[in-house]
Amino acid sequence: MKILVLHGPNLNLLGRREPEVYGSFTLEEINASVQKLAAELGVQVEFFQSNHEGELVDRLQEAGESCAAVIFNPGAYTHYSLALRDAVAAIPVPVVEVHLSNIYAREEFRRHSVIAPAAAGQISGFGPDSYLLALRAAVNLAAKKEIEKLDAKD
Image (cartoon, rainbow, N blue to C red; front, top):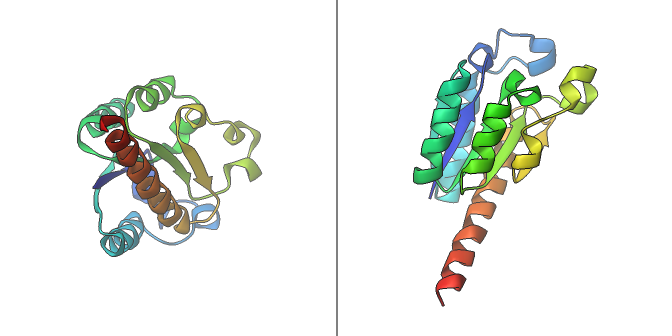
């Protein structure tokens, strides 16, 4: 089972960008902790980060063909990218939206996600642990989907 971990804009700046909001950990440290948990769970993870909306759309579409689930932190695109929302809705695999900070406890404009209605679920506010919780959820969702496929064949 392969899970895509998709990081949106400015997440490459973690560790330097607003540490009072996002903490002092880096994207590489988050990826390493996700990789460690993935090994424990017996799944593969693939990581991709982009500051470009179209690249994120392309990667979501590819994941629909090659991955069992997606963990997606759309960054600022969370609040207005209908293109990313539509890409999430279009792919046949579960997508878990993830955020390091609690977007509902921040500025008013950050309290709405256009992605959430198309995603299987959302995890926010637990710092780097948000990704670990999302990985567990993505693995469970993908396993359930696989069981449903097998049951449909019977």
